[in-house]
Image (tube, rainbow, N blue to C red):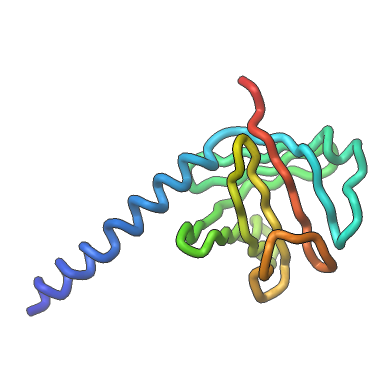
Length: 135
């Protein structure tokens, strides 16, 4: 009976893992900031020009002139959500929604307990519109 339960569990988990891997492939690579807002206001031009995000496997890196962060991330493709784990020494992770459209990736992130309801700008949110860096 245990073997049947284990086999059923693996069958149910298998497609989800494949979906996650396929979705991670869309994220893979370096992205530059095309546009963005924080707490409803536009990000300064110098912040947009300096910021780079890199997704590699389950790793997430953010680099700018002032901040460097390296951590992990998880996806729920069915819900279009992302969780960026708190970097070492920090306690707060980021939760958000994402959307791919043409050659852009839009992220709406918050450090609040609930996921943002949508991708719109607003208080306690950061919206990043990213385009893949040319290699």
